[in-house]
Amino acid sequence: MFLFLLLLGVLYNLYIASSNRWTSIEIQKNKNRERNAKVIYPSHYSMPSFYKGKQLPFHQVYEPREVGFPADMQTTKVYNKTKLILVWTSWNSLRKTINYYFLQGGSRSFVEYNCPNPNCRVTFKRKNLRKADAILFHLIDTKAEDLPPTRHPRQVWILYNMEPPWLVKKQAGTQLHLLNNRFNWTMSYRNKSDVVARYGFTMSSTKSFNRIVGEKSRNVVWFASDCLTDSKREDYVKEMQKYIDVDVYGSCGNHRCYPSQSFTCYSEILKNYRFYLSFENAICTDYVTEKFFNAFNFDIVPVVMGALDYSLLIPKNSFINAVHYPEPKTLAETLLKIASNSSEYIEFLKNKALFKAFLDPWMCRLCDRLHSYTGESILKDVEKWFFGDAHCKEWNNTLRTYVDSDQA
Picture (cartoon, rainbow, N blue to C red):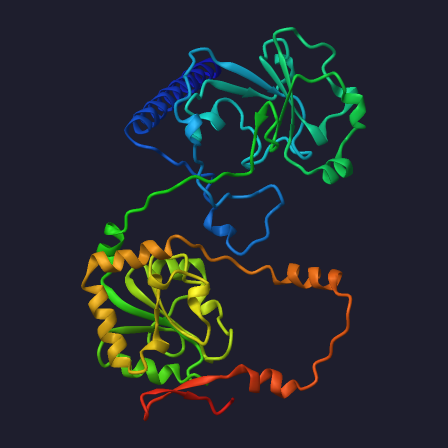
């Protein structure tokens, strides 16, 4: 009975191995067919949903960018012979990680990221030293006393590093002069490396908005939680709603999405709308908040209300300024006109797509200022600074125009 079960187990393992090999071959064939049909930009590992809101180890990074290929790599010659790479050291003291800058075992890294030439394999077993075509050493984990005893003439020893000099000095496992005359190649972010390994690159991109426009079934959306504001934006929107559909999310409306101001909410909601109201709660000098920036990177045209000259941030023909439309009815008619003309609407999206919004590094600017400050200053009139010099405006429902705010 024992022999029968043993034989059954062996046959089962052979079947699984054969199935996995067939599956791998089919996956590679499919990837090759897809690569020949169109340019593919594979992604790094997708983050499991249960990690949302959790702090992960430093190395467990799920890259948000896709993997692209520079022009000079898109016509790489494919070789039949497979090269074996032996990873000799750990990577930041780790032997296993999903980090993008860590080579995965076998051909996984080369196949999954759609390398034009995927014929390389990775091993971590030092017994394969004589078989290996290349030996990879991660610089800060390399120790002079742990190098292979000899280097075979056909092998390439590669010293790999992605850290800046000060961190190398801090983290290196050995004195660097002890590594002199040992390695053949360098692999790093520096352009003069034998193998350049950058943290990223840029290239031109084309984008079609025809499909995006076709998905939009609603006109205007507004996210708002402050319902009684100095700018009287809520009165303006209420008047707009008489002439155009405006869906309101948050405590000022009937729609909800949580977490508020999250990528999930923006991506799920904004795709259905043509215009987004970036109405500030105060129309004061230079006051522009996340109401404008948070939604900017999505395919939607912003309608702004604020005292800033928005053309200093983005092209004039990429947004509509409600301050130029004191009468809400006129703004609503303008939006409906643009919405009815796909070519005109797409032109707004194209102009906006030339720019991307980022978080401002205010803490860096604070530090810079602290380091460069040499004189003295004093704020003589606090009230004038915060109130009088703000030159705030509000929309007046009776006069149907913008007037000086009571808070000015």
